[in-house]
Image (cartoon, rainbow, N blue to C red; front, top):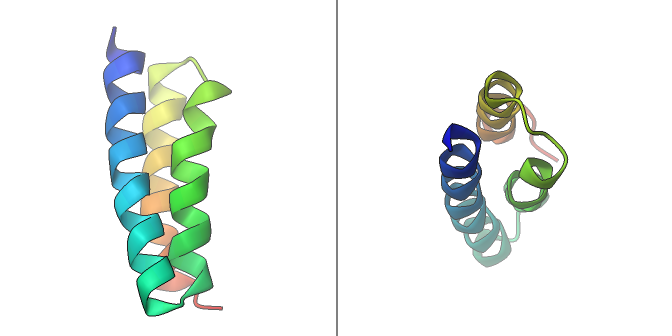
Length: 65
């Protein structure tokens, strides 16, 4: 159940990142948003979901291309 909720939140935040990146024409937030929407399909452990999700949410702040 927790994996489902984490995946749902990651997808919602990923949608926001993707829309922001597309409007601002920035590739890093757009890619992070796409990855936030896709990665929950491949990971089922809640701890890995949290770890990967936090890393992807922080990536656009440190990586700018």
